[in-house]
Length: 303
Ligand SMILES: Nc1ncnc2c1ncn2[C@@H]1O[C@H](COP(=O)(O)OP(=O)(O)O)[C@@H](O)[C@H]1O
Ligand SMILES: [Mg+2]
Image (tube, rainbow, N blue to C red; front, side):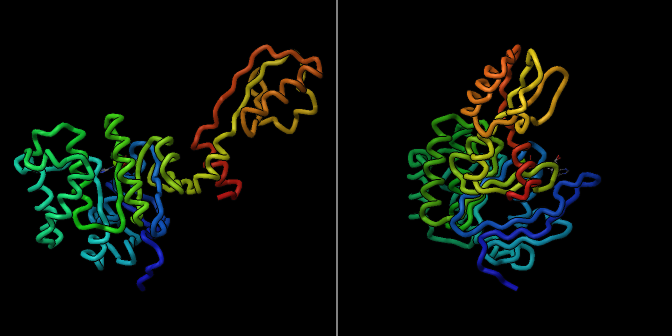
């Protein structure tokens, strides 16, 4: 069955490398036009999942469709619909930038693609590097060529695998501006990163992977509301006033840990303590960490 309603449809995908379960029953969908973030620490399985989307590194089970095309059964059409900016810089050092992009066009059976190649070079600030050999480019410039390479066949779906790891601020910003422009033009974007700020700034929905599993998937707005949450650990001169009992998350050693929906609630807590004549001996505010926020939301059924 071909379902065209989703740009990406990942269904129960699993993959092992020997004893290691690199992907464990991963399922999610990305809608056309979405800007989607895939977050997770190193080793979470992000790159393995992206390889599977590109029809490489065949999964042990499960299926993936890109714009309705199954990546195994319908490899060419699925691959035509997808542009991948790889995490590793892979290039032929003896080709020039333009040759690299022509070669990639040939891979997709596109000849006479130079007008589009020129446009890509221009938009990515590579016009004056068209004749440079790949090996002569800086890391940041090579990264730009990887982006251009992913776009030679004008794919509707673009996946960027940690494109800003080790990239300078200027390139990071121009890259984001460019990717946002692509998104506004209707391209579906999937970005993997381990920077939450990046995901927050750009994406409308955020998924998190850990040890091969999808542990959370949430809209950015819900996530932000939850991540404003803080914990405050207090060491007090006397017992906690009853008025604050509902806030208690846990007690550890001589401290009591209270929950704040956001930092502005701290004032009310301190006022309640003052009123009850309880002195604060120590106070420590901790930001909610993303993973615990995610997991809590999942358990609470908010996702
Ligand atoms: N070709 C491979 N052979 C064996 N193990 C691999 C291979 N590729 C990735 N892995 C392992 O699979 C896990 C997921 O890796 P990866 O998909 O690269 O994670 P991420 O991109 O989230 O950092 C890691 O533990 C990694 O060491
Ligand atoms: Mg990776």
